[in-house]
Image 1 (cartoon, helix red, strand yellow):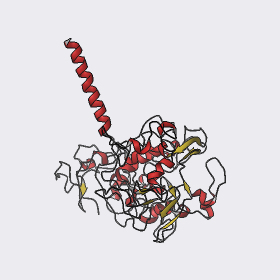
Image 2 (cartoon, rainbow, N blue to C red):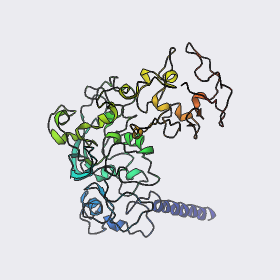
Image 3 (cartoon, rainbow, N blue to C red):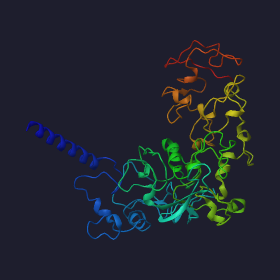
Image 4 (cartoon, helix red, strand yellow):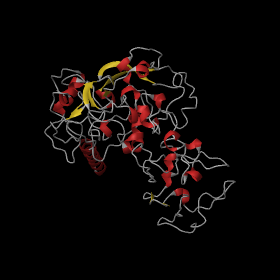
Length: 442
């Protein structure tokens, strides 16, 4: 009898804890999670006996989603049809989750409010390209293994990417997009304070900072666009794929650096309007070839590869040397280690060549901001990088570095290059973390 009672008690406790957990976790705005025992959220989307659509839905996707997120809706501040943020629902978020009448970071599905020509004035214009949400199939370019063709066909709707019941992830993204064929899941961490609008008041979509979400978003996007995931050296290393042979490094410059997620109003002309599709097709062309890009005429390329004299080249050295022949670059860098956000040691017995990202920002949003930023924090650094081993408060004070792994005082036997880790004049000076203080060459 005692055994039976104990068993029943355990069952009741487990049942209570499991159901209680289901009601309280994975919260997002509106009906998307955070359910209580007497939640009204279910009735927002479902009918138990009079449902018009499968899964007991009151309407089909995307119409159901647009009853809150559409242009004439009042259930959410995010108008994904027009790509704009509006203060129109019954809730007042604190802190605010966007700037009213400013463009959404993802763009829009029907219209997008963007300054895609960089004239300083935003305009709401029809979307020229975007992800489908009507449930129809479309080619996910690059989906599949090396050599598997241009891409697989995937049926796309709002719920292909988003979990309507909440996920606790950034934008309630599913760990695996439905139908992507991905074998592993990717959870994109949510923002500490959600921001749905672009930072620039003129709705310039370039240099939008995604912080801790940037790298994870690239991993997430490439669950569908598999062969678009490319690391250092992919621009000159044959992938073995006959279509996606040489590829831009998307691990240093992530997907959302150049593209929006929902839809863009960018226009294309000239060469930019006549880029063949991965399957070799030349149509549709014109504005339809905008590929969810943030700027007209594939201007996202020039935002990184534009020289100070206005000419466009493929080299970083047009603006600041590759690497610059100044300061610590003379000792730490070399031509094989050039790339925004690049980490790692590319040197050999004759020279030390550390990637730019070991000392400078990893986030491309800092590029062309008019400041030479030295960023030593290990936060967000790739696990294999030296930067990831720095002290959490590592910093540069304008003349010396402190808390950095590479000058940690570890005994090193040097090769032909000599001792690079210490300066003879201060090699016994330690900072607050027990690391050697290093005075960069000038």
